[in-house]
Image (tube, rainbow, N blue to C red):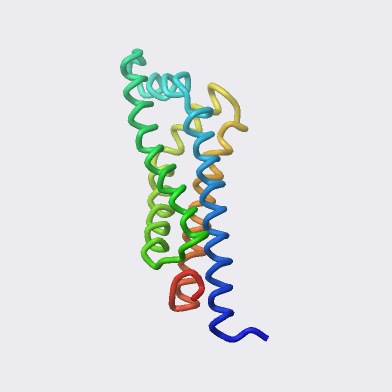
Length: 156
């Protein structure tokens, strides 16, 4: 039977792997949302539905700024891979902040974007957005529960 210290290390490794693989999965799904679901036609629909001229420049500026922020979140999600090898407390709280901020950042404009994706493409193309929001919130809640239950991070 493993000792308490061995159990803690095993729990930390399992939590680290779960968070790492979940982060990579969310990064892939969010990339699909950024580069497949959200394209120029969807952005043009968003702008015209709000009575803004959907010029080529306006659409380009909107999508570039949105994707730039999205790429920063993709990089932050990929930092979750570090959790496979190193379960550091700072990494835990960094990823917690990424999941919370990503969910709220995406949810701010979700209604308008979902409506435009449904209008231009299909409801199926909104799935990456929904999965990203729900997955980020679920991971944040998981991490918060673990932190409270174990009074530490990565189940230590």
